[in-house]
Image (cartoon, rainbow, N blue to C red):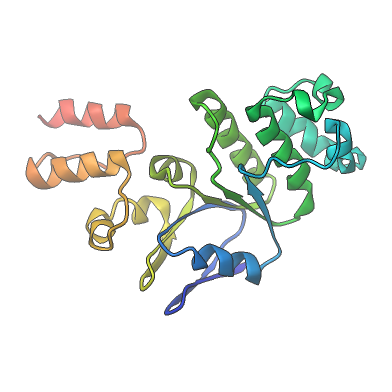
Amino acid sequence: MELEFRNKTKEKTVKVSKSIISISSLDKSIIENFITDYDVVVIDNKDTFFASTTVLNEIGNFSVYPLMNLATDVMQILELDHDFFDRKVSSLSTTEKIYLNILRNISKSDEIILFKDIFLGLDLKNQKKLMKVLTYLKNIGYIIVVCSSNIDYLYNISDYSLIATKTFIEFGKTDDIYTDVETLVKHKLEVPTLSYITYKAKKEKNIKLFYSKDVRDIIKDIYKHV
């Protein structure tokens, strides 16, 4: 599938299949244009308004096969038992309401789901669960677009990344985008912590390190070359 990302001055057209795409942008029009241009279901962690009184009524469309399988799989990843369907919405915790918002929306798209502020309101344990949900949705064929201010998480979970300012757009494999530290710094974009540590060690200390998303690999490299 071809996707086009554009701001007021530039555009970037890319071909992608099932994957996780991260967006780090100082220009909100990038996301607004993308949502307008495509049939995108937006899941926003800030959206916790529910019209129904019970969980089952809120996500009743999952009673249709094969959506029930999708719901069941996602609930297992989130460690929600079947009794969750019988709960009153008013009795849910903040985290459970975020999960309900995800469950009621993922059935609305056959192809593209955009998550805004995806980790907002979640502790580390539940952030990891949600990352597993994203991987699961990708593996069954969805294109997942993730918007977050947490660059370290975007670096870890995405296959492709878009970075943008009001006059600059670049798209590519995440490993390439977020290890090009000089370009990120030049355009005043945040750099993932592990990429920056590796970059500084290579440039200032002349240590032969490989970029990695796993801090354990970086530590091993440091011991090997220092």
